[in-house]
Image (cartoon, rainbow, N blue to C red):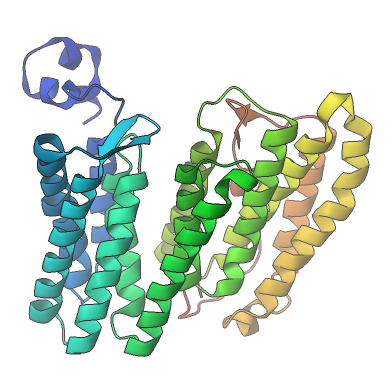
Length: 368
């Protein structure tokens, strides 16, 4: 796959040349391979959790491209070009039909759940497709659909309606408030989708530190702007990768890694605040503020770990990784070893590179 993206494939007329007929930069074929691997890795019993997400990214995405190209008139801007409203509507309709058919044929989900869940998945995936860039929809759409299905396949219909209302309200509020907080509507919707998936797939408490990292990132972009043209989307991509990595690591070893997921975002928020305070050369003030900010963020991480469903398995074991991660972030800040990729995202996210030794007890709870 990587060979097909090489120079010879771009200049030739063979199979690889088809990938380069799209003018805007895209890595969709690589993301698609990663999403297939992710779904196959998590395939356990329910075939619909594997088939439906892949059907969405194949049929719905194709229908969206065809309709948008042939009949698209109402267009809106995305970071790497434009998309059409007609294409998004086609994506929604095809996804809704596919979801209803597969849920009826491949699961014993109650009929009312099928209707509501199909609508929710179609709206969620269509929004993801509309807001994705550089081919990331080939990864985010199937992964998001899979996580939503896995969590809410048998959820009570009233709760599903509440989730659908929450999703609509989150999009409306963030889009209307985007200009007041210095975000584009596209970036605001993307952040809303990320937090919505965290709230619905995990416990709502686990969205607190990612939200804090988002706020800190917006703050640092105002005080210490970098060179990236899409800093918010770069951070969103890094945050999504962080979540997927910890999810796969946890399931590969049969452990719950939600504390380490929260540690990653606590470290990112801590570094962002430090970078914002370093404006105009105020390095000493930034370092003085570093310790109390770090204690607050990592103390919040410890509090969240205590109230998770798996807290009994972490009693006495969650503090060491939190202390080690805090020490690593403080050391990085005091030595000035804080690197930003194009001035936008920590390289790497501070805590993501820290795997402090601790005893991981087996538990049946994953990301809850």
